[in-house]
Image (cartoon, rainbow, N blue to C red; front, side, top):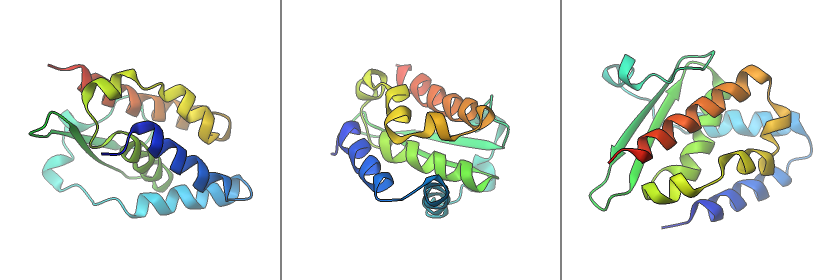
Length: 138
């Protein structure tokens, strides 16, 4: 299993190959296109992420080995891409690794903190908080 830090380094290298934020936005949207859609039943109130301007749903699936698998979807293309980034970092990780990871530093490393509108940044933080909260459950 890859560490969260290794996945972050891969993402950072991918972002660094792109010349500017216009290209990076397109890349983030492209990442979102690869997400498997959630079915209608999973687009429930229980899976909805609060604090996002767009509709966002996250599904947490505990695995037999204790790791957490995440799936997600949104009605906004850029947000789907942001979900894809979070899933690359967190899905398949153990709860203690998720809790120990500094996501704010990761957002800074990827340049997301300065490139997103405050509304998108708040939504991204809300999604990360939801994942962390799910990792804190016994």
